[in-house]
Length: 60
Image (cartoon, rainbow, N blue to C red; front, side, top):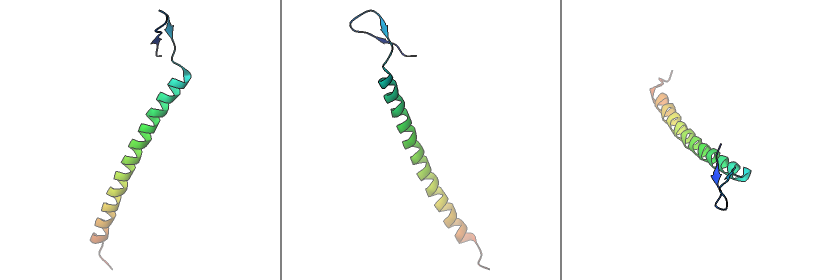
């Protein structure tokens, strides 16, 4: 759990729910972006492999 020192007192305050939600949203957005990049690389690799396979297949 995070604790934030209050500038107006010596007590400890919990971060706001909004701050926690915004931090989680940021992490999830970053993960989504990373996964989209990974998916695009996978699609490119799949396309390359399919083209290689088409060249190797003997018509018959």
